[in-house]
Image: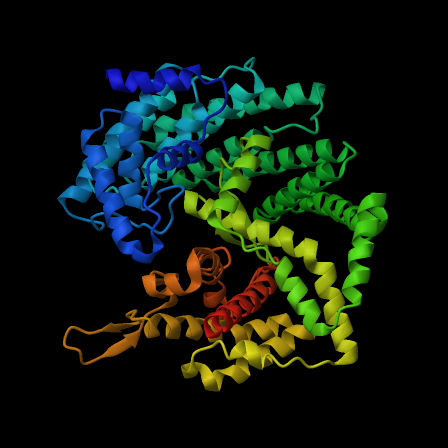
Length: 573
């Protein structure tokens, strides 16, 4: 245990909150990685074999946890696209899984015994749950440990806010897991702890009523999480009347939070207030609480109307410097012809990378350490939950989705200007030179590319997407195939051959080499990963729930065509 204590001592001595993704990144950045992309596969194999030797020799429990976790999940933090090591089965793979389990339990137990780094502890256990554990006995051991830790964690009303929230968050995480675990049968053992959390919330509400929420408040989530746990526990017992009573308390809590926030005069508080009232309305509606629903909906409409009025004229609200800068840029933009405008917008289009999103999340955690702790949902127009993020990969995808939405808001005045001007002048743009970049196999499809861009330039980008997405998918298939990739599935007797779906196409190294790491990652995220999953939604007519990522996709395709055209021209010269 000595090596474990050494690691824990470094955690105890650290006065700052530690994060697993930061520690994992630092570990791999300290390693001497091979960077010869001309022999990427060889680089991966050498790197993985060296890591395996390091794992076998290591006595550092945290180091063993990081390496074995990477081997079984394919998450190497700062080194994407390496993949699982030794496949996803077999004795050696199972050995790696056992190391993850043992090292995670040791780390978590000692962190709890020393009462430190609850945020890091939760992230270690979240990583443990991402591990593909098939051994029923091991799952039972993990659940037993979770139950022990639930009893061990004590929360006091008088704790400092940050310690209170981190311990509360950790406890909620443990309870959530056991509530949802099919292998954990003793759900009744959780009731007392959940009820204590409800009492704690009631006490905290009384404190906040005497001391109003401030702009910096970060612990509002505690008021809802306890009720959600209680509801989930009741649902397991199928007690509809009790569930409705708890839901009423939860909705009233959201109304109270919304009222608290709306009383603080600032943009961010008004927006948060709207979110709280929206949650209250959803709950009242779901449980048929019509009397409460009517008043909450009226208040929500008032807040939304006020927010719209205040934000409908951004130039007027902006500072003098911001207004003048935006006006200057727009005046210059209006002097450009349609082709120059397209090039300008494509030039300004950010290619979001995995590392950029990771850095954004780290910054967000520094501002609000608890935002990324719990899952977040996306609702469609009907109020249905269509996406909830829980795993690290899902949180990353949602962070990208949000980043794209912010980017489109920033650049939208220029796109709108281009649309409106082009609709008036009806200028046509021949993309023939760019489309010559496409392989000869797509000669007959160039018209469809051209037509989709024509629709885009008059502002009908939704129709443009329905034309463009299938063509881009076919383009990527052809490029992978031309470079030697296996793009089809073949039966054992070779009597039947069928096209692979797009997800395994993105896993082909040939496509990765064609697109490059940055374009490969961003197109993979947008086209086949939730919450965007553009290819699937276009193919099946599913609501896009578009926050601007569809527009961003078209700009990204144009940008890629420009890049490939320039590469071809350079090779020719």
